[in-house]
Image 1 (cartoon, rainbow, N blue to C red):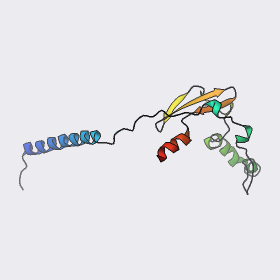
Image 2: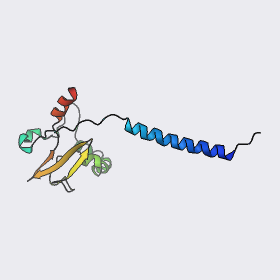
Image 3: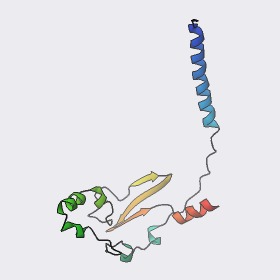
Image 4: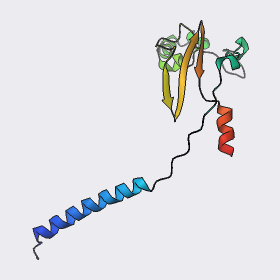
Length: 139
């Protein structure tokens, strides 16, 4: 069985590491050019006038029932469900249902900025206009 020279192995390892680093740097430099920044119009709170008709209502229809229908026959299952996030995540936004700090909170998601605002008992999200974004993507 032939012996392998340790210096040859060391040179091969160093060459592989250097080659990997060169490829990594080259791939980062030749990536897609960044898209230009464009001022994105936002919907102002005054542009949108929510109405009570816009708030989702819980109405049984088309053979579906509300959770209240389960309570009588399945009290344990209803109690278990009632404690879950699944029930609380679909509530109408109100002072009672929003427990975390809200007004003035800003966050980014998917490269967009969102600002949460509260005016009295009404809750809003200031965000880029989705219709404007769809129009820009079609160009």
